[in-house]
Image 1: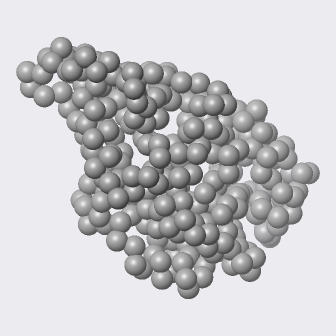
Image 2: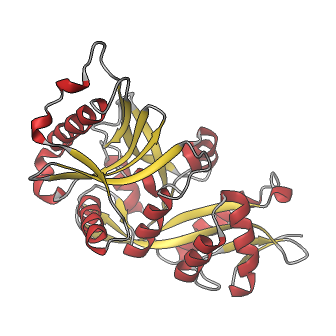
Length: 327
């Protein structure tokens, strides 16, 4: 007979092993996460088998919740949900999700949100059974090298550069995080991740991919005068996959957000296409409507209070959350 409990530090080794089995992260990263975010008997619900061993687990990381610069309260990020292989298909994760939703509601949290791993439609369908809704999204555009395009035709006089940067540089990270915070606070409904969690997730994006042919990068797109944006991108063979663009001073250009993105994206994609023959680019940008057929779902939210339900019902544009946060 299994039971649900809240893990403490005596479960640390089991938690590390299960996380590594499920997601492939190394022990150093997992340990650093537990050290920073695990609160004993508070935010790590687990299913325990009769022998006392952990069969299933998820993590609840609490963040401030905002709507148009106003704090609504706190929400929980449901993170790293996993079940040991030998205990899968027994309904353990369903029990944990139901338990966690009730736990968060009793604690006065406003909502629970999550990123289904790899935007897998089966996972979206699974979480929707518990009341999760897909309101976080992006628009994907694909830019291919035009027929007859010559790389030399790009305006090289502007001296554009996509320069890789070290995210551990404190000045660079400060700029990045502040820009992320500005963008997040001005959305209709979004959680503001703290600096440490944001850093851990962003840095994990840059870790060596299981496919050695895929290179992950963090860069700034700039010319001699202006930093247009920071970019998280992957390169695989002849295609650049732009997972996230963060434009500075979002609050100052809110009324022209879409125009600013369009201008920046045009510059960036033109630059990438001009890097060589037959270079292509896939890029995710904030969506402009809920009905656009090019929209892709990134994340889901479970509202726990009526005020959050009302905000969700009135949202006309999907909320945009940084792609690279999905780990």
